[in-house]
Length: 371
Image (cartoon, rainbow, N blue to C red; front, top):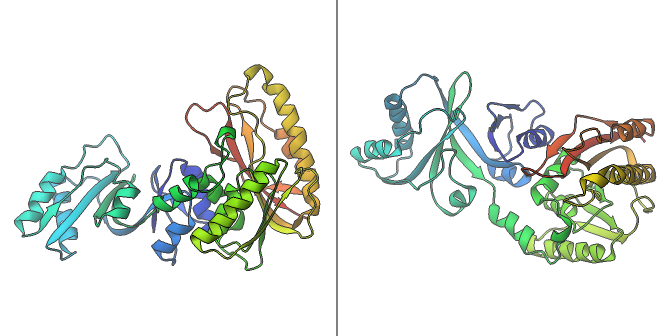
């Protein structure tokens, strides 16, 4: 199976390796390949960082000319055995190559009696929204260094459901800078991997508006726990989770507490901890970042120390720590060294999520807790 990756390819690939196939690899900067027996419709609903799923049809030589390429595409679309056909052909990779003339392909199909049309779209393909609501056969030419892979789109992200959870939930914290739902989903998947236990428990001790817990519920984690210092956030997260259960007919149980992450007490231990803690202001004063950094380092270390009593042995922790491109030396290396001494080991280099020209960059760290 081939995976069209989202805006953060490294993070998307890490998610695929965690959930689908640890040997997954990039074919080019936007497409990954992995082995899986899972149905495309099920797989696309699990992943947060994959936009489309493709099924390979055949391999073509990189030096193929447009005339022969049109013949291959004509033959492939003819095999659909449809007298009326909506189609599109994307080209992914090697942006320096000329764009395929779909009008020529359309005429070729018309000469053999097929009524065809194609919508206007980008070189890289139609949007998930277009494919979700229209009956269109989308073929994809995926350019690699060794070959061109012809593949057909088999599943697309259900953007309607993502939008519903983002915009229609009862409570949001947009003024504070919310963790995007797709990033929350990817973080949950990094923590849980492929095998979800029927008894697993996940904790978010900086719950905010509940994005992490919502996405954990969407992948059928059975028991969710959250906490936050802010009572409004606690009430809002409870409202969001009750809304989610009703709207999506989900069965998970949950509890949300008002508590300081450095002092949180629970009556149970958890298998996973996934969270975005307080990162400071979205647009901080650069002159004050050094002091902010010291305060955050103290907060995070206190929280990790407290989590000793909350985590099961071999629990997985996936957490965001901030970085400031203007202050590269403030990188929490000393904190990571301290965490190693108290039982937390990093399982990989941090993954970056950042909007263009962002003052604060999210670094997603993964830890294993020895217990």
